[in-house]
Image (cartoon, rainbow, N blue to C red; front, side):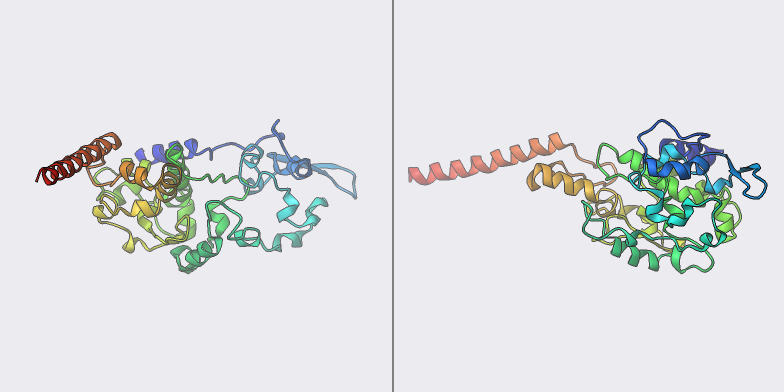
Length: 314
């Protein structure tokens, strides 16, 4: 029951539980998409039979319903449907062979130079190909299995939105790995208790709320903004010190962009003073760090002045 509550809260917090609408909502939309959403934005759709002139009504297949509210708040909101799908989809009814249309992948549109900070889509693709999602047989996992092109809304991590980012990213993993259905289809494993599998952690729920699954389950690569090389469960991090230490791996994953941003905005010295070690029970206070530095500087200055005065009096 705790697991179901966590999954529900994460999904709700991340904005992934919006229901498909019966009509196009009053949001800033792309008129070019209205034709598509007139059917795919509803639970039911109608079309006229050319032979009998009869209007036929059918229930839309659940996986083909687009949440139009989520679409116009996602990263692809400025695109028209036919930017990614064949223009033949404008013809109704759709030709059956359109189902065989190959799906685009991220690198078909995104380059390694059009994002700040650099996301490195080429590196992500290389890492993904080495991950269990790509190498394990019969998974059927692709980019779109985790990143729904019609709804995902990935934001740059910062100290202001870090909790939202953690909840959003973890909800993606829990879509399959919560043991509530999709995981069984992909991997054929029985429903599992996620809490029980992480019982070695002192407080699993607290970890789920504050760090992403990939911090322990993915291999970190310095030039890739988000780790995509998901490792087998046997290779997951089980050593607390790898995160709770001066050289925490979190500095190179979850907090990587945030720390770089602090160095850019505040300068290297200030960022060092205000940095956190993530060691258990030792996260320092930036104010105390500054006071300690000033006391140390005064002590060194006092010794230097005393030495100069002694030399001058000789």
